[in-house]
Image 1 (tube, rainbow over the protein chains, first blue to last red):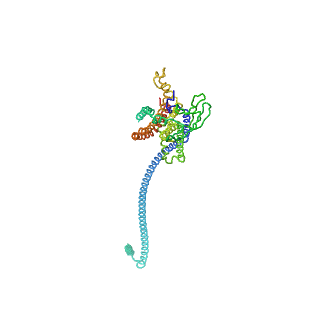
Image 2 (image 1 turned 60 degrees about the vertical axis):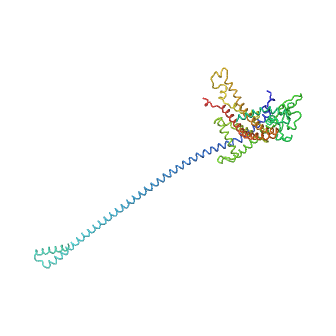
Image 3 (image 1 turned 135 degrees about the vertical axis):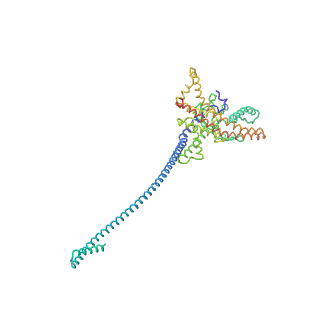
Length: 172
Length: 348
């Protein structure tokens, strides 16, 4: 093939190929070691980081939602507890008051009955004492009568009975 | 868009003989094809401007090894030793006069305009990416994403990495190829963009030179075939077609085997042709300005208006093309590499 008829840009040129090879190797080695990896690695890392951040944000959002629900539930629970405690306290209070009233009633009844018994006892004591006194008085009276007119038995007995009746009536 | 461009190229090619005739008829006439080709071609110095016969250019080192003596020579275009000369018949490349009167091409490792441009691209790329890497050094994933230039580069790298390389080769096997494909993309893209600058440190036609695209296509071809797995080779020599298509006459295997070479060839020609054509069109419109003035003031104003508008348009288009061609080269390389990394499960 006769290259002389062709323009020089179409003809093979050993020197140019040699320098092209050298230059290309230089640029290839420098760029493939220092140039591209730095950019590509950084972009890869950045995209990974962005993805992770997105995931984390989503997790955080869902956690926040959970916490919200939890706190809502806790609040509800607390409210219910409060209501139940109040209710319980009211019933306890009612029971205590009831009990106290009951006790007071019992106490008053007991005191009353005791007082009644006391009064009864006192009355009985007073009656028996009275009878004693009456007997003593009647004996004394009878003694005096006996000393005075111990004539007829019948008259005496009538008199005594009359006297006793009078005493008993007086004592009633 | 492609059709419009090919039409324009066709027009330029068709007008070439006319212009060439004109230059023969009249002394001092502008030879557009010659000018365009000269600007597209490699050279031993970096021409910046010419004014009244004097040209301003950056001298570039010439490194040649004599075929006769085996000595290395380091010089510039101005003080070339007497046994060497720029052979006009061979695109002005350096030839050596042999003692027996014949001339041969010595081993020429000169830093030509294209080579210098490649090294400028290399330094730009290294500077840009080391700057980006430095930016990341004191930061971790929790710091803000970069803005401005570093952010732009990050966006670029990740677009190619994710949407081209990962998508084309597949999630599982793309990692070892990513640095190569990214380097290819940024090398082609930067070279294309710098090639659009009209003056130093840009303007050299690098990706519009078949040697460069040949080299890049070779790299891709090596990457395809060296790391192609069993499935890939089986698909070439014993493809999934009816048996009579592969034995006794190995019709499909032959076609598939040619595919091994046509894939990188297509890559090579596509990038070369696109970039070369773009440069050629812009240069042609530039030349039209001079042509117009040489025809007269009226022609000058009229043609200039048209060509300036067209040049602006083409330059903007070329910025797009600079990206698209780098993208396409990378994408197709990735697709071809991905095809050579077939999954057995995917086949079944």
